[in-house]
Image (spheres, rainbow, N blue to C red):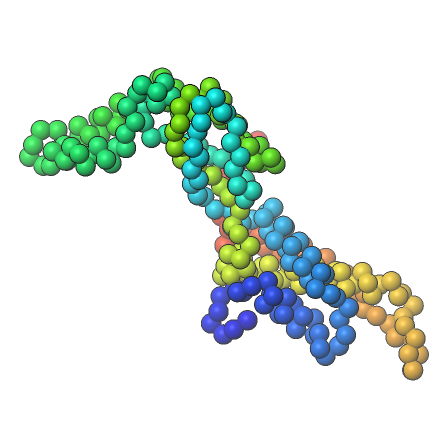
Length: 253
């Protein structure tokens, strides 16, 4: 890793560091590129299972179509929080579809001090719009299957409409590898996984390998023990939020 550089610019840079940490080049390390890829994949998979730092909140847009209720979202989307519609009554095709910011621009007198209306009037209208939507079902109820990535709107959609979907999606791999908090954890966990793989290979020769001065004993069992201990410590560090992830809220029950 270059001086003053946070994280890794690529997977290849991380693999190079893992090789150096295993003393490859000084001693013979029996790992191929595929083994390093597996170690990194395992580290990323574990991080995404245990750390809130692996997901981010974002918004995607879908275009509804008449009589279509199922919409496929990108693979990285893990959870759908809410669907946002722009107008009131648009599902019938006869309501007014407007953006409140556009309306404010077209009716600037509502926001000008010293004239009729003002912010109070605009706020009252916003609350009225919210109440109408709540009473007459302006929001879409939905279900989301994170395995098939299918968002199902629980209503007979009748119009074309752009809908904003609030989602939680996985942070891409290249962002995780360059993240100042996630990258050291991923490097250490990948290192522990590489040790485990190497230990499994070397432990096949319990009696050692023949050498000029007698049998050469390999450190397979020691490597596996170190790897398991390091993995447990790294998982515990996620639970302790040492790498910067966010804690869970209050859980009752």
